[in-house]
Length: 190
Image (tube, rainbow, N blue to C red; front, side):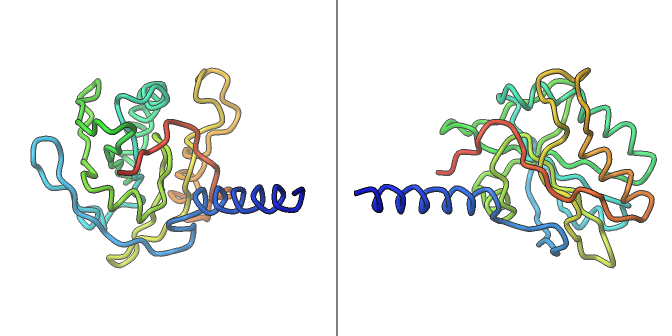
């Protein structure tokens, strides 16, 4: 009986680990996507091939964690816009009611209606970021995961994972940390 329990535990642990590490990994090329916003405007990753970096954020305005990070992400967007960094916000489902909600301060979401992009990329939380480095029409993943180490209190942040990754890429260097597990609302699959 003990062997069965241990075997079940190991199987569940392995499946959980695979779910957390699925999708694209740092250093891999990612497949471009085209999505639409709530207003029907097309958003294509390839439109940003001339950028220094592209930050793809899987988020949802209904997620409390995404709400805590919204101001920080908007500030990073403002801070890095002049450095050639583009931010793309993708609406991901966090419940079975996959309706879109307009975020504060007019953030425009692209909507991943069929969940193809979030599944392909391995996004499991909202918010979760993927930092891409464009090169001759292709995009290489350089960082994925958490924005920083404290979703609850911005003033207590000790490590700014996203900012550090962007600083490295803007300086033509590889990020020191290429992956950190995201904290947030789980993306629901349906």
